[in-house]
Length: 441
Image 1: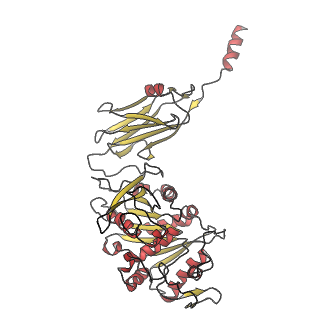
Image 2: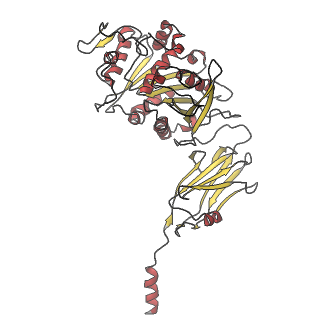
Image 3: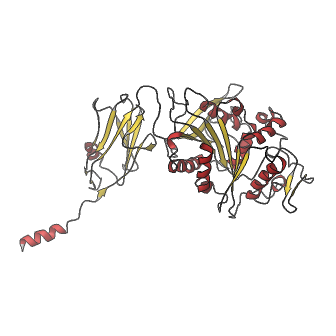
């Protein structure tokens, strides 16, 4: 009886609840066992499912190498469930193993059931040739660059990036293309970075692609570049430094044109959705960097409601023909026409801008979903003349190209079935993945 009681009582003992490692990251990207080219100054993050007893955790944590244990600092966030390990002086070309032994170190007695370990190797020397991409729209991936206007005033442009493109002593051997994705009217660069980052990861393109999501801020500190809503048209910032939003993108692309830093880079894709799509089209017509660069360029215009036209014609959807409107005096004002163009644009003639629209490579990327579109401008006569819906306006500009310059323009059209005014839906669609494959082949 005693034996049976002992067995029965033992069977009813509750096992210790388990600790789960939810994520392991390095420098904002996923920590993969066997990672190479890791910077000697790096941050490792371990995210657990429960709050930790930090003293017990540190007894289970170790980092080792053939050179011995390096110096590091540990901090804790998220109620001590997230461990942040900072390394500031790792050795070059050295393999390190980060390990956590199985044991009880949860704050309420929870236990890690199995050992966890990751090995990574640091960069060969003081030249950075590769690293794991930063994939989270967090401060880990947020960067700034200081730009200067013609009066020598300076301001900071913020942007999300999966690689630190201004890192000194970098020769990015694996990066073959760059994608710059421009946010819409909500100025949510973080969301667009997330949309594209997810697509690049799914298509196995993260290690060969620089992804940039610039942030055209409305407000900020005194050192930030800030713009009104006309950032999407290439207008100057309203901060102390006066820079066109087009000049800001020029600066990023000029960095990509540095053959020492980016020896393998061949192509730049500038894309945007909604207001960002307007930016992509008019930047594509007006920028100065394409003509002077060894890189090739593509502009992907996703669901814009405004389009630049080189002439006075607009499409009459009732009569299915182009005509010259007479009842809207502003319909040819920038950005829908050349009149009143900002200084960056007007430094080129209208003939040069028009030639760029025809000669440069644009993809009009249109969602044909019929969902409600509360952002569609249906009150301004110049906007209404472009078409009855966002999709129709994209169809109409491409129809104009095909009607007036059939066989002479360098634009294409791609349609996303069933998706409306939805940036995530557009950039994570199968149609966009197929388009990327075509543009990057």
